[in-house]
Image 1 (cartoon, rainbow, N blue to C red):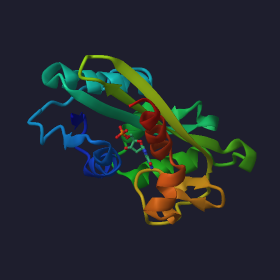
Image 2 (spheres, helix red, strand yellow):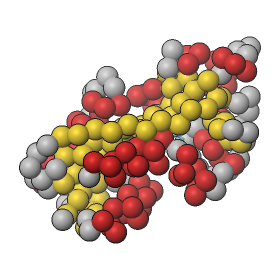
Image 3 (cartoon, rainbow, N blue to C red):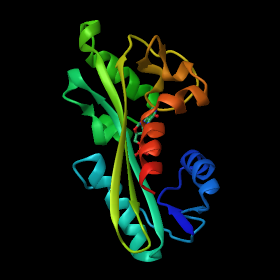
Image 4 (spheres, helix red, strand yellow):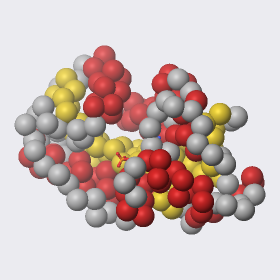
Length: 189
Ligand code: IMP
């Protein structure tokens, strides 16, 4: 069964391929499927945005489609950056976004630095049935960037006693929001 990933992010394609190919799915990226669209993320929740992205591809392909939407919620910032994680306050680089969050948390105590990564995955089956699953990773925001692995907000997000950027890929996948969402997806697919 052909399954299209509604993303052109190579890292995500690799991760989903590794997990879904053994289940008998021929996993292809949106661009490999010849679908050249950029979907505007106009939803107000991770779920809405994942569904928007999956539906746009399903409308063209009519086969199994998966799309995901993810981001960081910082409790002391009213769950910002949330769905705006990729473009927080129009800042251009991950480093600038990390520094902005650290600045905004200046003076905030340890116990109030709680945060979580959220990942929602939308699955649309070949018959058009739409389902969403969600995975989270609970942690807290540190006081400076630490570590060089991963991407995005990983250097400021502490899980246990290390940032996600200080973990190997395997360690991160085993506890991450995306890893947890994929576990939920495997229960329903
Ligand atoms: P999207 O799901 O590709 O739209 O990603 C949203 C944004 O959330 C990314 O650009 C990152 O800034 C952030 N993000 C999502 N997942 C992670 C993660 O695992 N580590 C660090 N940042 C993440």
